[in-house]
Image (tube, rainbow over all chains, first blue to last red; front, side, top):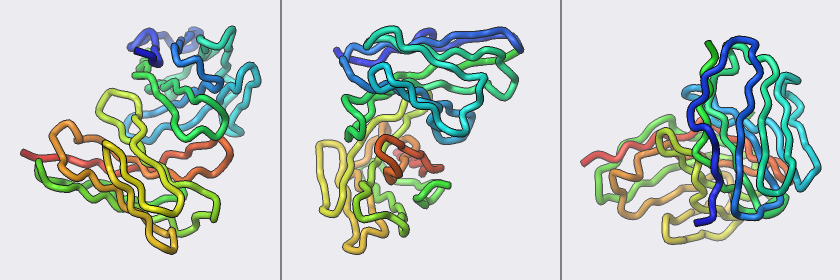
Length: 113
Length: 109
């Protein structure tokens, strides 16, 4: 089945140690998104890619970066994780900008020690 | 600053209809209302969306008031698997979904 895959599902890192989360999709969608969801809160958009065009939300910290080497894969890099970055990170895709539906992956839960 | 207001929690008996309200009094003329849900430890799942007219699909029905200032998501026969947080979202930009706090629906046997 076509889907959005996130690996790993659980990631533990140390304070200040760079970490990379990955997302892949078999939907061949043009747009990929990264959301952060802290405990008991709603998902918050960090940034999105439309093809290779990167679009950062105004309030996304510089500590968060992203790469999209090809259509299928998108990475979230946290350069120096702090305790406040512990959260669920959700990847989503859509077929085009303004598409009706975003398809979400299962998320990666990040723990910062 | 979410553009929607939802009750924080609701209960529903299994097999009965679940009616989830959402207020969006500042909605603009070209903004759609979307509903997503998030089952515990999973990513959000699209349910339905609409602009003016009522909509129905295999999952739910969406009733939008004539003035578009509020809407109701209806799950016609709720099951235990429908227990989730339900998000009502008004699209604020071309590609910007801002999730509000949502309604935690608990379906009880």
